[in-house]
Image 1 (cartoon, rainbow, N blue to C red):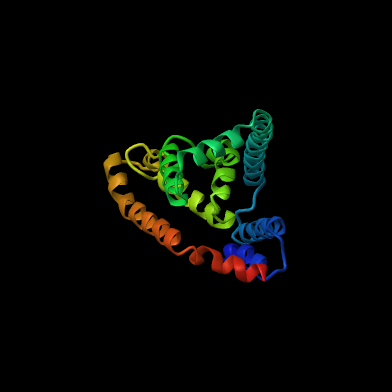
Image 2: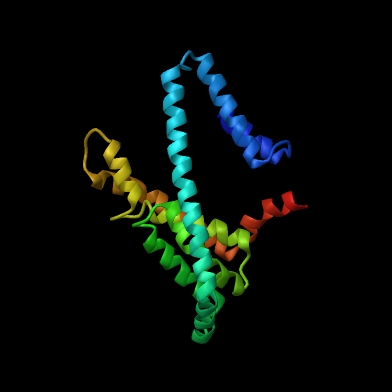
Length: 207
């Protein structure tokens, strides 16, 4: 809780950028580990190697995303999709429903970062052209991805949880996540009907 308050509080207090707050979180983590006598060289080495692997994977995905964006722009795919949507005569909310179903299904088979890198360059311009707010759509997209990853029967996170359990069947995990799936779907419906729920806080920060 201390680390969370330090990281998030420093951002909302305006004393640190997100990157700087990450450094504050790291310093707080090291301090707490040292205080509890758990700051050892093997632990540091494992943490550094883990961070290097994660960073390398993220950078590889970002480089791939750059080339993907270049190819998409070169062949005019975004414009073609926009023209197709306009030709279908879909209302903005019909388009949004298609996007919801798309991310809901795709999130059952792909992890969050890969899905965002692969789909945002194509989906986002089409959604923005329909008149939806960028911040609002970003929140909707992340919620959809997270819901999809815990949705039975093939949500990836279901198998992650099952793999770290010592015993029991995956049906127990599925039953356990159903209230969370229902709650998140309800929240998605609410912020679709009342976008101000999402845009209120960013509006305060922007002002």
